[in-house]
Image (tube, rainbow, N blue to C red):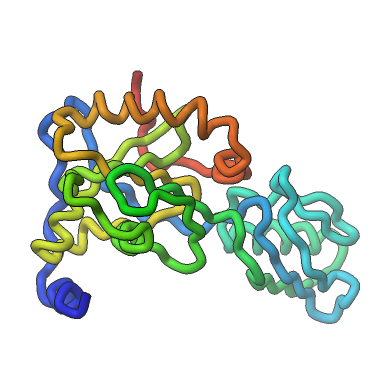
Length: 236
């Protein structure tokens, strides 16, 4: 790991390499800010208004119950978005109200890591989690894995956006442009070396996961609160 980090520090990032065996325009996702979801806990403090300084948890419907204001939907919002929404709500009752929000617990930032890894699992994002860290946490990649085109499914199985990440380029070339950071609801699938068409393989994965994962509580928690893709959805 030391040598890998040293290589990453010394080698400048290069352009991401897209796969050539599919008609899809696959690329790397852009970075997105943390968004809140059901189960995440907040501490809200309002200067000189102790009655409005409370600890709240985002409910399964994506909302919090806040004194005086009532129900406020915060799921799918960034930290700045929650701050702005609370500030606007409190300002309707108090002039020059100063609102502060602290994140006290994060429970809804989960990702799935599947395929050719030693320990496929649901993983909780507690801090920034790169795809490389996720693969290491999942016990590492199996020898039969195809690591040049690791699949990243973002936005859910109903309206997914498909990306590929060249993990080989991270290890072999120190290509930090491929070091994607995961966000809530991401599904990482490491294919086998025998896969020849990423498009067909993704559709195979989608067909397998949709009935089993789509109805599960874990998957509902993934996308509860409006997790969004960052590019055009994968067309049928």
